[in-house]
Structure formats: structure tokens, C-alpha cells
Length: 225
Image (tube, rainbow, N blue to C red; front, side):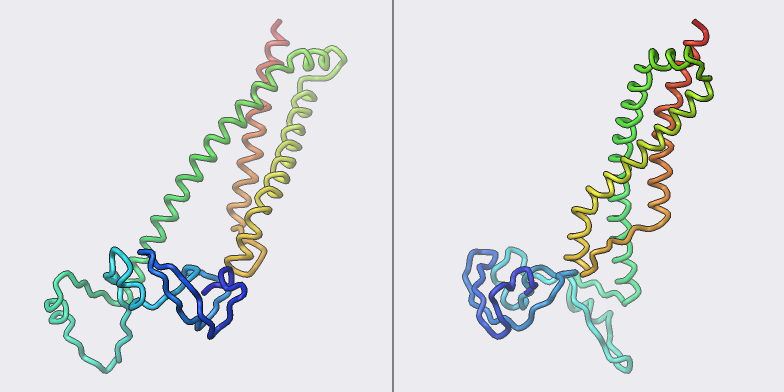
């Protein structure tokens, strides 16, 4: 049992559980583990669970054989139709393929979210900058050059990016730090440096593109009028 479910319970005591079909069982607690990585909140013997589930068959069995033993795997597979026997390398490869598939699925979802967020950010910045035509005209009339106005807009974009990253980091830390503490026992989540650099660079690039390009268009129209 995980520590999240073991409040008030002690090793050697009885724990009352309701199994999948509603059957009530009093089982003896034999161990408590801190983090349930790879396990659920409750880890029960297969003999106890098998008769109370809709699918009692075990999908995978891990076997550690003696290197000196010579087992006829083909005969074993022939005696049990549907049985598939793989070595350690094949099992590791299958697990890696599942992890890669899950990772690419997550990357795709994150990419879609980032794309929608980028469109919203650029659209908001562009519309806000296009509405500053009167402000830019006043700056030009008071002696500011076109380069100085663009420099002001550029520094505004940098400031917006820094504030957005600071606020986003704080909001993310509120949820990620407790999650990391509960999963790994370490409250400092790992962020790959290349991903952090890509996030910073892409955020700054979007802010500059959403501000400078509309500002150039506004200044160009002021100069030609």
C-alpha cells in the first residue's frame, strides 16, 4: 500500500477493501511504499484479484531462468496456443517503443497547444500595436526618429517576454513542484536546458514579431501620409 492510503494503518494490521466486483475482503498489510511509481495505491496478490475481475488472465509473466538451464521454448509455446515468448532484449525494445509512442503523442499535443497560444499572442500584440498609430505620430512630431520608436517597441517586447515567462514559471511551479515531490521525492522538477532555451527564444521571437512588424507598418503609413 502507498503512503497516500496508509494513514492510520500499520504493517501487520488488517485493511478492509472492496474489490472490483464489490466483494469485501479484509487483507493483512505487509508493506508500505513511499511512492507508487509503477504501482497503484494498492498492490494485491493475483490469486486474490483474479476471481473478482472481468479479465482474470495475466498478460505478461516475467521469468528468470538459470543460465545453465536448457528449456525447449518452442515446445512450451506449442503446448500453450497463443503464448508468445520473448527474451529480455525484445521486452526492452517493446517497452521502449511504447514509451516513444507516448512521448510523441505528448509532443504533438503540446505542439498544438503552443501553436494556438502563439497565434493568440501574435494576434493580440499585433492588434495592440496597430492601435498605437496616434502615439507613434506624437513621438515622431516631438522629434523621435523612426529607429528610436522601433527601439522602444523592441524593448517593450523584451519586457513583456520577461514578465510573461516569470508569471508562467510561477504558475507552473505551483502545480509541477508538488507533483514532482509526490512522484520522485524531489521538489525540483527537471527541465532540459535545450527545452528551456527553446521556450525563451520562441517566446522572445513571437513577442518581437508581433510588435515590430505591425510597428513598422504603422510608421511606414505615417511617413507616406
